[in-house]
Length: 79
Image (cartoon, rainbow, N blue to C red; front, side, top):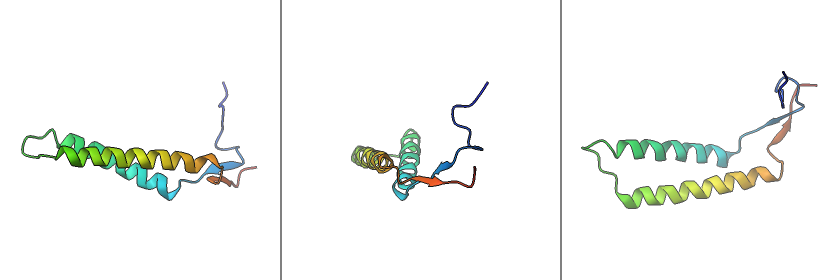
């Protein structure tokens, strides 16, 4: 058995970008609002959900594109 990428031995590590952190926050918020909207006394306007879905989709694409150039790869202390 062997790992495809052993984090103990790889010379690089991936640093999360600010856009990625914003995207993760939006994804969690979207899920939380979706769940909260199912609770009877809480009403989430459909326009808000639709807007948040599109904004989250945009940050997902932006975050993904930000990793394509390899700038998120940093040299690690591993040899």
